[in-house]
Image (cartoon, rainbow, N blue to C red; front, top):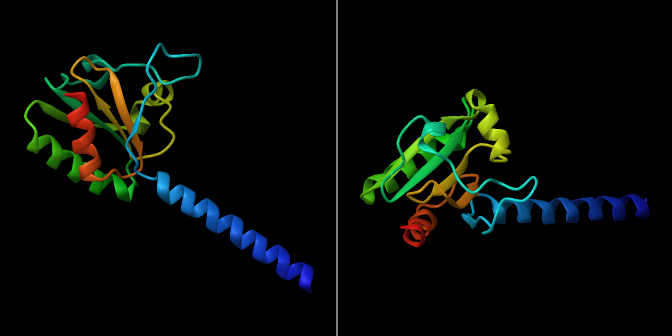
Length: 144
């Protein structure tokens, strides 16, 4: 009986720690390592042709979404609002299911995933999950 309680307590501790770690990383805008893309690494840029629209003159916010993704709707609103606040910033939403080659190349593992691109299409930042508005504005300040 005591062994069962110990196993249950350990399982709860591990699950709690994993949940807290996931929650901390969710939506965090993080840097993409500089330098040439290594084997299996995320490539350094995306072109307007790949997106199907021209890049913003200062920066581009690229959002990968899927049809049944609830956080994608609120992420869309946040990115559109941020793009409207800053001149020269474009917001592009990509359907992940329709662009599987790009999803694989950029290592998109879940939706929403957001990339912050410089004016040349270079990937400067990325976030998996719904990013905070303040974090996006800060990331754009570093890119532009």
